[in-house]
Length: 300
Image (cartoon, rainbow, N blue to C red; front, side):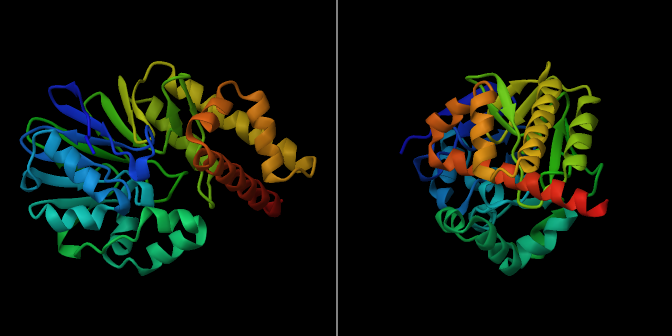
């Protein structure tokens, strides 16, 4: 399989990982400086594609200094332990809440199986990373790359262990700004089973206050920052309002998703393009939002 490398500029390469032949789903970034940084690894099942991408970009595995996920969900870092095994000079840099889980994978893997089921099996089981090869990145942590730094900005909401990585006027945003679809110029929410809507909106607001020109999504690819934050907040709030209305009407999560497919411009195209995988992703986001509303109602 040929991995086509995109050269965004002199400092950044990216490529489509294509896990299980799923195109335009996971973007891998290679940031070039005195130190070479791999941002995201994808799941374990795409380990061979990841190695091909690194090599096709012109790097040996021994050239990689840092391997950095935005968070440790399987589609972002399930292959972390696998690539660390062959990138002998690399250190992994993760959120403090993730250090234990990536070095002791039992709870990480069992929790993924419980939530994702067959999809977790499809992604493949992670491998543990020795703790001495892990760097814990507190909020505000700065990683020196040579002529620039990667700054860790904790952006919870999607996950408590989520980091948005800032490099000059660019940000590697993981899932903190949802799923980006270049063909329709929109980002839609993506939420896990346990979702914090308040923290997600706060994270987006905090990022919007930074001097950021470009956003680099894991799902999928580069996006100009202009108007992105406003559009994304609007989408998150619209989805939450639709979910709340659906709950009040005793609709199921599938019925609420059908409503969104009818009312949110462009959403149906994502289902046509990516099929059942995408529909299940959107359905999971609805259920994550329903869980948030239920917990909030219980406080009243």
